[in-house]
Length: 589
Image 1 (tube, rainbow, N blue to C red):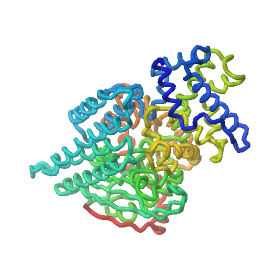
Image 2 (image 1 turned 180 degrees about the vertical axis):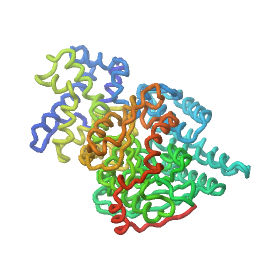
Image 3 (image 1 turned 120 degrees about the vertical axis):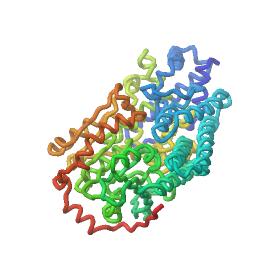
Image 4 (image 1 turned 45 degrees about the vertical axis):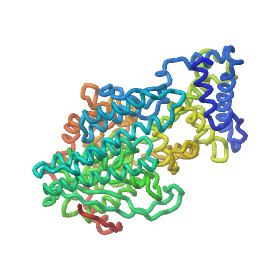
């Protein structure tokens, strides 16, 4: 059997549906047709994996498709593709599947308190292990296990160095060693966060960051306060019940003797608040800002700990307890008329959604990047349908007469099949299974699927069958995340566009255009092109360039001498202060 046919045969054996024809569409014609298209693709690929059929013209085109360069199927590689700007290339990809997220994570790790030499050493350890792997014996643990153990081993080493550091005059090095250890613990845990070892590493990350804060506080006026706020989850839990629970956060100020402008810092899809601080905190404090970092439903501890809160589109309701806490419990440290809400990555959408409901309490909003909805951000058709539907699409492009009437047109745009599977079918059909089959045909677990199944679908698992069961519902829920209320935002908005952000970029200009004219004139869209070095997602690898532009907009609003009364509704602030309902507890480091 030729290599490309062997690959196809392996894919077919991996598909969980065993090519059973769809027996139910719940009476919906669009659903029924989509299932027929899908089953045709499965059956055709199954037939072509039989050597007796491989001389047919149709199977010949499928074999031709399978021999195309891997770049032809790059869309199936996963959310964290190779950075379009090849600023760093530390990791090898020892098989066709590879780990396309490796270099992206290396880039972001270097932007979160890390020495290049240490990251390069970790990469050499990982590469040495990956180089020994081969297609016949590879397992997910070979890939991810080698990755995680290398980062965690170096994290332990650096943490021990910080713990034993004895120079009483150099608190900065002690702090930064703890911060680097925290950074490495997180990077090692990222690919499979549901594993117990990864959760242990995330606990170590939080401990290392706290240890760094203690060293910082002991030598300076910096003050850090950890706290939780009460939150009522109505349906956005793993089991869909109403839960009364708590959400975690911490506040840091460089000067507790003054009321400072304050940034509410909301993370995104797969970054905990601690890693977000390592990425952004020093820049804020150096410029005289206080900062409150939080995790809402679907993020960090709120996601991985019971009751496993999932994302909610009512992000204003999710984060208002943090804003209440800032205005009431931290009033001696912050100026409540000078609060900016920042959200990064998926948090860019979430913060924009929250600003639509909370802008009367904010001096500015900074969604990075701003989005009007999330459906297009999770390009499920391109990423996950290609392994099974892509070959049929190729046949239709080469010779449509080889397919049943109308099939070439249907497969010419794979969303013609994916959209009905997700939104016209119901859970009692074979649609969830049909949706999972192209994903199962991929050779390794895309970490994005783990995060999406948990944070949107409510299935916390990295076990493939269990994981797949939550994805159909997870992707369906994503479609409900839209922001029709952008015109209600009254405070100035800053958003940024990375010209080569292929993860979540693309809707920034539409967001600004949806603002009311009165808000639009005081808002701004900054575009970072390739020459700026900040064109990647989250401006990874270019904090100096990004911060110079971002603070040039924010500083006059949050630190200028002019009154902010025209931006903030004083009546709105009084209302929320009098109606404060979140009982919280805090502990000072």
